[in-house]
Image 1 (cartoon, rainbow, N blue to C red):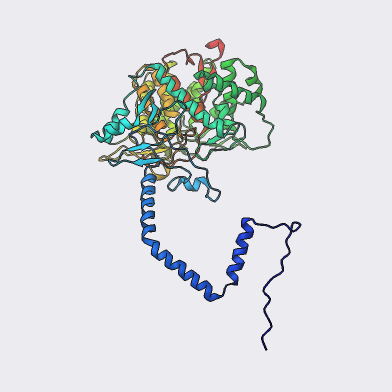
Image 2 (cartoon, one colour):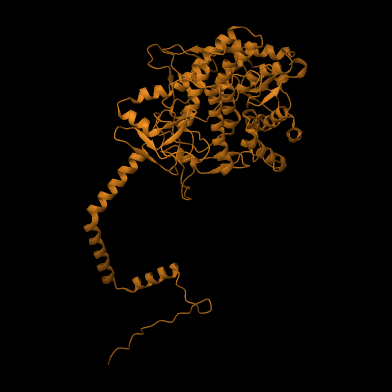
Length: 569
């Protein structure tokens, strides 16, 4: 007998009123069913055949992949602009959802979303495929208020000019630039930053320029409000009007969110009040609230050291905590700044403010002021329970400007002398770095025989586009008219353009100021870059003393100018 015949068909019920589904998913399932119906021997033979084909093609594939890998490695090593040419970070590709957090990425080789467009030349110089602006010729970029042909510079480098020599030429001062070109360079930087914010973060707190997105801190349009008075001072009417419309129609404080009282006061309240005083537009006044003064309470407290105060106050009992730790850096800087500025704004009548300020400066001289080795740079360190630390935050670079402001308003002349010494130190924090940009924190060498004055720990090498140094440069130039301060500010602006400018719009903070070949961008543009840094650069380059006269205005710690009381102006 023959065995029962095997059934050669199967019965299938098709859903969807009997329609035939020829989609990719159905076809993949069909192929898988066919594969499963093969015998084990048949599947093994097919896999063996595919394996042999792979072996046969291996040399060609390997050679091709080696070429790609070498090209990628060359590109990756140049993914951030070299100091020879003032270029911008290339436009990033869209980030993939499986990527880990930005914070984690930034501690490695930088975000993979950066699209590398650098091509290495045989002599080590670099050309970049720029995102062309409207009306811009290929191979030409705007630099120093002029047009520079990058191909021409590359050829000059081929002719034997050293990298250091080119860098020295590019870091020549602002003295050969007209005032108009300097001011226009700042306007160009602001427009570029603003365009990124407008395109990718409009109405939100901060721009993330690399991922073309935004981050929220307060949910109050922080960058927009922080930049209002900057746009007014720079004369950017169109940008100001579109921002004003958003404030009038969209800004609301009817939100149940936690905010940082200090930061919201100096940025949002300060921004609205300053814009009101500059424009006379009561809409900005209607949006503002007031803040209480606590200086009288601090004046009475015990726990000070020669006028220096601890960083923390217990909000329940109003007393200092963490006593014995004294710094002019983070969490303490604005207290000393406001002692002087409140005295000035109030008509120089509140003597206790002046007394506390002068005493604090004497305390700085006695307890925190030292000189570095080998070049004797004057710096302000920190004190912790009697132990001195040669650590200085970039935030401390507000102090030269504050000292100069005090001297302008009649305080001892040696305050101006100290301001000039500290100004030199703050600039050295920039030019001693390979990118020409300052790290967040430095440590000064004090031992004889030291090779260099400044050391930077790995965790402190980031730059957040901070304003304190250019702020002090503005004060020193306004009071001395020494053009070297403009030159220093010009160099800093050019280095911001080289290492932090993102081609699709905006500027980004970076993780490593010591590596010009890969600065590891952090994908964040702080609101103070528009609210403070670019504003102070514009004022630094202006020779008009009536542009925010320092006899009529004081700047809050977020660079928002507020009027000195009319009775004493």
